[in-house]
Length: 165
Image 1 (cartoon, helix red, strand yellow):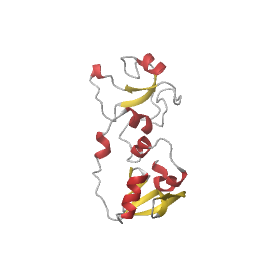
Image 2 (cartoon, one colour):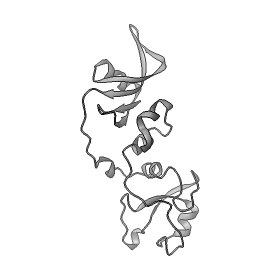
Image 3 (cartoon, helix red, strand yellow):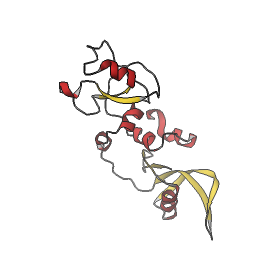
Image 4 (tube, helix red, strand yellow):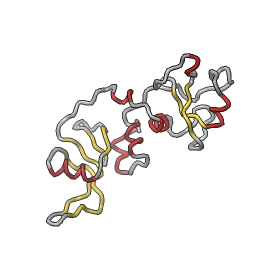
């Protein structure tokens, strides 16, 4: 279930159980629900799909910059090789400036790369391998981590994720 801050900013994905508890404790309000309800012995309630926290939770703006994982890099680059443009075929991560040449492991030096392009580039700079990047790498938007937590995005979430998704 998609969790929005009080300001309608997407901040997390949680389980149906956690979303129901937040709604029942009045810590969140339900914005979207599924057609099938949640049933208990003595009650029934709509199954939450999108909830919004009642009080604003301060999220450090640089929190997403620290979480560099393969899936996060793939999501940022839309599961597409940044050299040749092929999608979802034997993806790896590549250091644009190889670590052996002093390149770091930050968002600005790691890109999604298919295995053939990674082998072709090897331990060289893209210019030396006669390869160009489709997009300059950088820190992703915070909604990238929504895509990491839930690779398939339900239609009800789209309007809350907006163009940044």
